[in-house]
Image 1 (cartoon, rainbow, N blue to C red):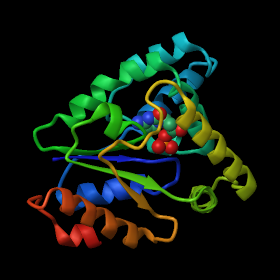
Image 2 (image 1 turned 90 degrees about the horizontal axis):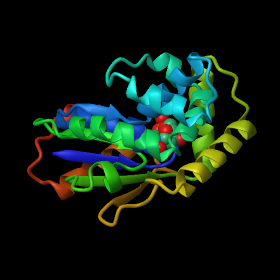
Image 3 (image 1 turned 90 degrees about the vertical axis):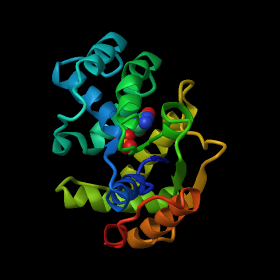
Image 4 (image 1 turned 120 degrees about the vertical axis):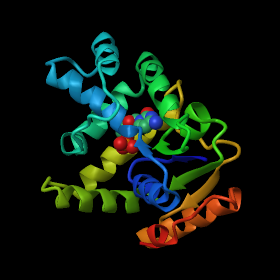
Length: 218
Ligand code: DC
């Protein structure tokens, strides 16, 4: 079974994807990390984030599983990732690794922006997670503060709006609702509410899927 989770920054898609993976006993790939790691490699190499050749070479050099998330989760890296993610040649380099992860015999859960539309158009269940920008900015501010980063709400909201614009507006693989995806609005839901709703959506699509109820509810 392949589960595709897409949605804008801080919509809750990462948490939902991780919890679905636990609930259904599937491996999980947060594809945003690929773009974040690409951006990080460009900057660590002293390159300019808008340099296409540097970004393509950084994407080619990535290993799929060796991400140090603590270095990739910061606000600056989100912004830098959305810049390299708007380069079609960078996306082309990263497609194969994502598809081969999804093609594992066990099945998989992937989350990102183009999973249901480009990476796994035949996924068994597709969820498009949305939430109001203001609520997403509150969540992201909280998350950044927990990491010890300064997080001014207005700046975080502006950052989220800028990234939305870039992710929705780019010509290659923009953030877009797949025709067969179900929208899950988490604006008024807490984590447990959002996870339960997502589990129910997957079960509705694939009633035979083996559910580990404890993980799904934990
Ligand atoms: O999900 P995230 O915030 O970690 O993603 C970081 C950036 O990477 C995001 O602004 C857009 C880009 N991205 C993408 O274009 N396609 C994906 N499948 C995943 C992320």
